Image (cartoon, rainbow, N blue to C red; front, top):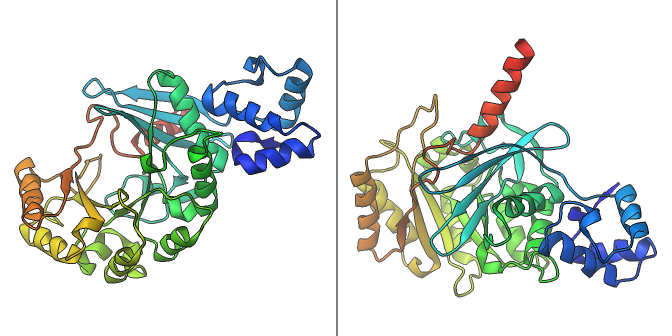
Length: 355
């Protein structure tokens, strides 16, 4: 049975025609699903009952079941825990900002990259999400917070490595940026990667992949430290990564974001800051740096640096005229680290089994 949300607009048009429906039905379905964000075919009031019955019998519309959510009393961010049809669970985070709302989306169940500071990697990679499962996070989250509380920004920074699920992420981006579908701005979508060189090259040479913002999880200014924190750096070496990033065609307004998780005593010294500045070198206009103080979780071997040390790191980068911003984690009063809410649910389910 076909899932409507697995289809980009061209595929939706082709499917509509393949089942003997007029071409305009593709736009009609898109309007109800992506604009009005309805939860069932019965709410599509300008479609005949017979066609609604056909759609219900031959297609799927929804993918995710909301298991639980936690809302921060501090900043209003909401972490959703969704159950997939196979019983696996994923997280999505709604982040209200001053002038817009952002949604942090997952692309995999678990993750194979193995970053030592990341909670999501504890269970390894279970599977990739389908296009529909990625897209439905946006639709159902928007439905939950209300259509008046518009989500304008999407960051692929949740569970998983987006570029390791290339085809489904690509199609989700096509759906998000197509004016006939979700109609979000390309500039408001960011894909965060641990730095898989081959996949970054593939994305930038793929004419069918809409141009969106790229964020790279850097987290170190030297190969040894990055390899310690991110084993993927053994085969995707730091010097090769920076050489590739420096060579990418970057449009005005699409600066590459270097994400740098600051971990106490590991990568947060003034020496690290000076080395990062030198790594960027004369390419300041190509990058901006997001400094992210580590978000502790139970059993983590790492700690967050003191605020003064974080600010000192930022000021050193400023001395080199590098755009550096501190991104304090949202939702500090809820299960803030990515994967924690999922872990809670797994532990609860296992406890029930034992009882």
